Length: 548
Image (cartoon, rainbow, N blue to C red; front, side, top):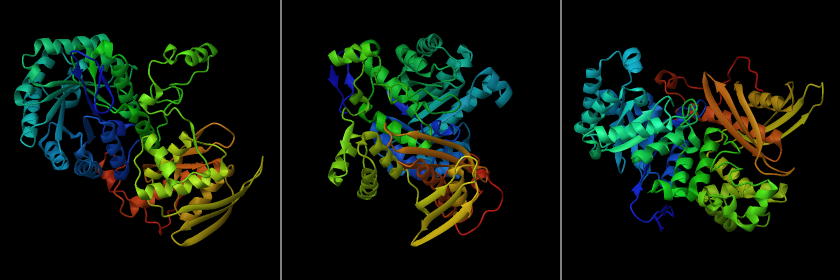
């Protein structure tokens, strides 16, 4: 056994490198409610670079001005991975993609065109000959800009094998360096994917001139299995997302396919360049930014992934970890030490623990997190890694605060209408309000925030969970609010669940106001929707709203 520079095992003997193509920022962001602003996309892109993914698909540049700007900024700032932009086989798409990725250290244009009978007949209204012609034209146009071009025959797994071979051969002849085979609707099975990739390798005469990639959706829960079957058949690239995000049921989960290859290197004889110790921090970052909570029993990165409750399992683990663990928790980024810091710990200790958890903090970020840490340490007897990670993720996903939470007081009971007093800070000014109304204390606080900020929204989702164990655990609240047909997400932390709710709601309000005051944020793939602007923070919004 040998090691890569990032610590990923490479089996001795003849092995293959599998490229990891991450599409969290493109396909993953298409999950309902998972849109990210520019700052958040840059944060995730840098985390993916630190994770050592080979290719980052940064977005679909022609979809909206926000998407274009995000891809362009990632191309300018992020170094290491190939930066890829998606485009349909249309001249305007390809030109726009190149404008966005041209500043990348290593740019790639990814063009796609549907090939299955159902898409040809009902969506494109094109013949097979027209499909081949347009695919070749798209690849050639992209090659006029950069030598790294990927082509995807959309809905490949429902395309006739003879025609699929014809298209693949034609685009490779045209110069495509990667040919991606998408299971667009998650229809395939592992045996089918194995046979499909095997057929392409055996029947396409120029297949050795391009890397075979796969992009599997999870509609039947088979995305990872289908991707691994494809690798077994000879695929050299897997398209995947952090936490399996993506349209509908999502995509192949990056952390699962990477650790399957690492753990079963004896079987697959393949390796990746992924720095696996950053899987958990990256998963947490993406979960925090998107608001998509990772289920506790999620493979690899879930809280219970290395938890053992059954007595016989605990006994075996104490005697020999490999009795019930096929991976080490530290290999994916979980730390072996849970209780780490207390109220007397300093900045250096906090910075060291943040590095151990896989986070890179600027001086300003460390100072802000340290202040929150000291406040938390006065409230809690024991500070756990999860507490620190939650504070860090809240800070690095922060937006400029027009309003900040100061204090609240609420009086209520069964059958009583709540009475709430609320104080917020806006710049150097403190502003207070009192309100009698609402359906419970949280709704009353939300209404009071709306009254002070003069912004009415509709609360679409509200979630609260405990960050760690114990009666003094931090509550982490995530809210989604709707304003002018757009969804904004907020997040708040506190040992007081009502205060955490207030902070989360106010965070969402600040996101709306940040967009109004010039923060360039992508919220929808519709260019028309981009033109809708929320009010500035000195304009009152009218209309009824039910906050909770």
